[in-house]
Length: 323
Image 1 (cartoon, rainbow, N blue to C red):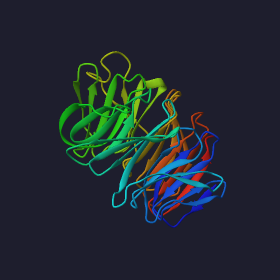
Image 2: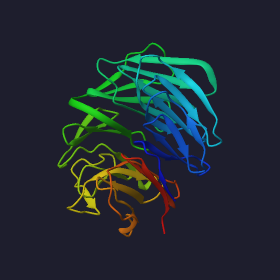
Image 3: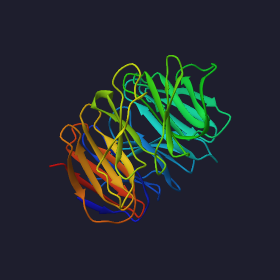
Image 4: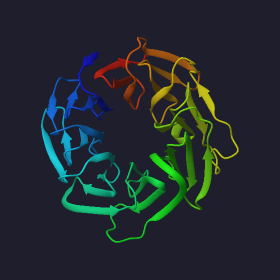
């Protein structure tokens, strides 16, 4: 199933019912079932799966946070006029949604319209992620990551410091490790309990996309000619261990990765437009989009690893079955 949206694909996500949704640079959210939602007066800059599992939550350059649903309906969840909402995260465990706008990190509760929290940082919030229980937030910013308890109004954050610009962040599924991607062609990690630093370098390009799989024992990232896979089993995570590279191709760089967290399956989207999936158990690579094109900008895989959705910077998108 292929689509031509004629607008930059910001995000591709599968909701709980298996609907593929695409947030686009023209401000719409399109679903594979043909519904189109006009979410923003401008561009969609970031999106996440709604905590309830139905549809997408999209943040735009119009300062609006919008819940777009596969039946074509939409609800405004927040409005910050004059702001750009550039990162969105949601937690099905807690029912909370977090989004970054400039130096502010905001939190909303889908079950309580009156609930609102705002946390201010020294620099712009580049990314945000919930811990596995949905109670704590990590905000990637310049100089490190700031940790907040999502529901507490007045608090002093824990600041995990590391020099440089942090642009993406992910918690390990057990909540023990926090990993950030950096502008400096490297990852940085912290063991949360004691703030132990973990330097994870050697990338030829910026590793902007990262996701855990195999129940948290592995971390897959972009930023190289293949998918870089770090081992995370044990109390020390990747410290003192070597990463592996899967699907090496000297003609392209992996731009996006997506994982089915409970399985050993991952998907990769390349900067030359190709897409493939792989079962790390047998290292079996399944080509899903063999023709080359514009760089892949959005990628998702279903929890059962049976379908992959992708989109590129020119508005081409698709959904494929993993054979």
